[in-house]
Amino acid sequence: MHIGCPKEIKPQEFRVGMTPNAAHEAILAGHTVTIETNAGAGAGFTDEDYIAVGAKIVGTAKEVFDTADMIVKVKEPQAGERKMLREGQLLFTYLHLAPDPEQTKDLLASGCTAIAYETVTDDRGGLPLLAPMSEVAGRLAPQVGSWTLQKANGGRGVLMGGVPGVGPAKVVVIGGGVVGTHAAKIAAGMGADVTVLDRSLPRLRYLDDVFGGTFKTSYASAGNTIELARQADMIIGAVLIPGAAAPKLIKRDQLSELKPGAVLVDVAIDQGGCFETSRATTHQDPIYDVDGIMHYCVANMPGAVARTSTIALGNATMPFMMALANKGWKQACADDKHLLNGLNVHAGQLTYYAVGEALGIDVLSPQLAIK
Image (cartoon, rainbow, N blue to C red; front, side, top):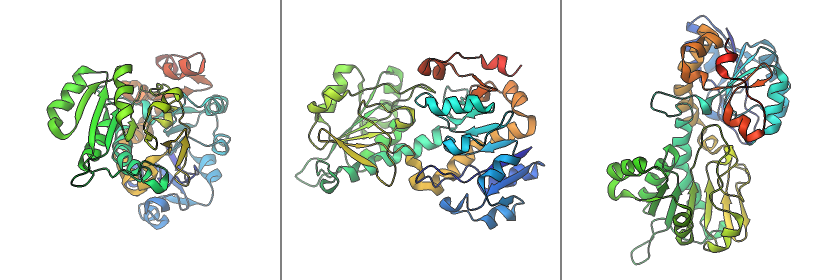
């Protein structure tokens, strides 16, 4: 198979879809790899690193899209990239289609087959291609939140760990999954007073057993959520429903109940955000104020630590990429139900139910698509 990797063009996106190690694996298996020049520069990989393992470097994204059977990326294809996709071409990347009708429409019109990292599953009910970026985003959330909390940035002017005689910041993490767990660990490590909210009692028991006194847990009823939110200096939104639009956990009219200068960090912004007042921002202009409440809603948080993120993502995606290249997408998906769960679009039809429900589009069963 001819595998192509273009340079990411989303603002401040420094990751790259293929590491030199991933390119090397593909080439050793007999595949051809084409990389757009400087695609890896933001993550610290040079063109020479790719050439050394046998990849071909080309000057433009168009050359990558025109020749490759499979396009491997990080972020969802931007409008200009979507125009270069063609019928029968395979796209393997993050898509986050539920809150993005324009992208969905363009992918359907292109006739391509698109497999989304964020909906590939595993035997434990996890999302193995989302997990490494969730770990990164979760660990970053208290870090960027503490920066936003500084008075000069519009926040309350509260230090995460406090000092002797002055209490620490109160941090509420909504969602006890991968993002929430990592966010809570780091926030607690910074000395904050942390409470994690979740609706799964087994998950709350697990967190309590494993992390004990590191942070507190509480059930995420509507009343409990707003009660804890009123006391919080920082609220981290970490709720994910695979492939679907994120639920709105704090409404606009509830902002007036929060402390002035409190910070909302919305890690679910890729799926539409879990605060009603959330809108996607960039690393260049990451925060904004609504009714005196500071919002941090960067849609590609892991891009801030591009080298760590690229290597972590590459470790997770490489086995799936190799299966798609070695077997072809239909056979690879037929052999692996978890990879089949990643199929979102095929030949002009939507194949993921949560996206269809969010956008009001009819869905073709993925099992029928591979036939």
